[in-house]
Length: 227
Image 1 (tube, rainbow, N blue to C red):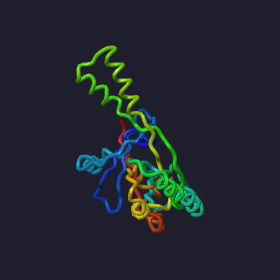
Image 2 (image 1 turned 30 degrees about the horizontal axis):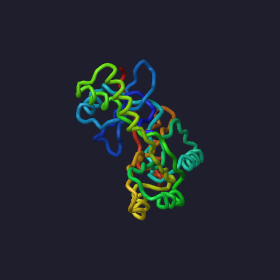
Image 3 (image 1 turned 30 degrees about the vertical axis):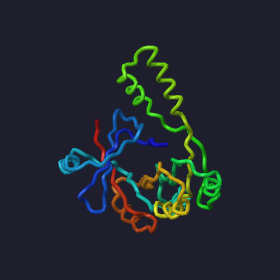
Image 4 (image 1 turned 135 degrees about the horizontal axis):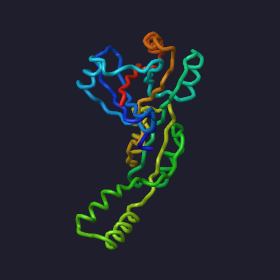
C-alpha cells in the first residue's frame, strides 16, 4: 500500500506558470509501469523554456478537494461530460503503533467515520537486517540461520483503520484526539486527483472551466520527456 502504480519515473515540477504545475512523465520504450514523483527545480524549468519538454496532447490532471470520493467525482464529471482516464482518490489510512486496550480499539472500530479496520503483515526491512548480521561477521549457514530467526522475531501484523472519504487530515486529528491512548501513523493521505482527456488543443480552455468547480483545487499540464 506504500507504493502506488501508474507511470514509469515521474517528476513533479514547481513551475513559474500561474496556477499550473507541470507533471513530467518519462516515457521509456512506450511502456508505462510504476510511478515515482519528486519536486525538481531550475534544471527542469530550463528544459521547458528551451523546448526540450513537450506537452501531452489531449490530457491533463485535476487536483481535487481532500474530502471527495471516487463515486462523487465520477458522477459529477459524467454530468458535465468530462472523460476521466485515470483516478487516484484514496481515503486516509492509519496504522496503530502501540497497544491500546481492546475496549478502546472496539470504540474506534465502531466510530461512524471509520470505513473498515483490518490486519496486514508489517513491512520488514530484510536488507537492513542481513547487512547488520554481515557486519557482525556472520557468513554462510550461520548467517542464514540467524537471519531466519531475526526475521521471524520481527514478523508481526499491523492493525489498520481506513476512514471514510469525507475525512481529511484536520478531521482525522479531531477524531483521534478523543482516543488519546491510541498512537498512530498515517500510511495514506495523498492529494486526490484524476486525469481528464479532451480534444487536443482545448486543454487550457477546459482546465479553466474545471477549475471553477467548487471541489477542484487546481489543474496540471502533462509534459513529456522522451527517453
